[in-house]
Length: 201
Image 1 (cartoon, rainbow, N blue to C red):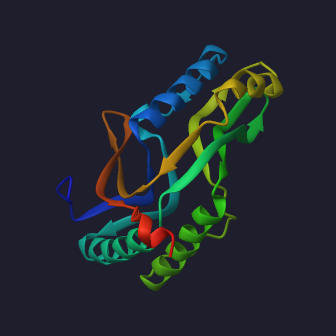
Image 2 (image 1 turned 30 degrees about the vertical axis):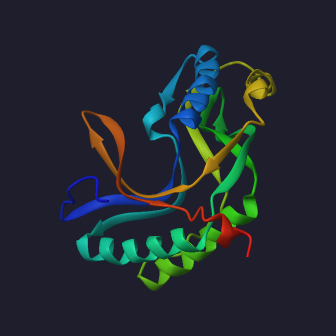
């Protein structure tokens, strides 16, 4: 079902959206980090997601082609069980972490399978293949400044890790700036195939 009206062009990506329960849990972890940071830009809980493929600017004709690919992907893949594994970061300079994120554990082969299928399908539609190695992660904040040792931060969030969640909602997501804030809005959602009989064939 279409959730919003499309404009002629939009900035978009494909990923997994999360359940409210999962987003609430991530918000609790984020809260622990906020209490131990001096400043930073924190991801809005409504924006928590797992990126599979950044598309850049797309138009209506591309959206229709992407829709067909995601429909097929959702039918040929089953819900995925993941666990929160560890706190990580990209690019630290002095006391500032460019990105703070959570890594995942669990059915990672299934996530990688969907990623590879998606990369190949999007390449055939004219999108460039990602040159960087795929590193599934959930971004919690950017440009986070703290003088607390990173190992201590890891220990603080450790009690929240290991909990299992299900990834079953593949989405084509619109990304835009509204009133100075980044907002992600689902264009279309695709539930992964949860047919138990198919799953056990």
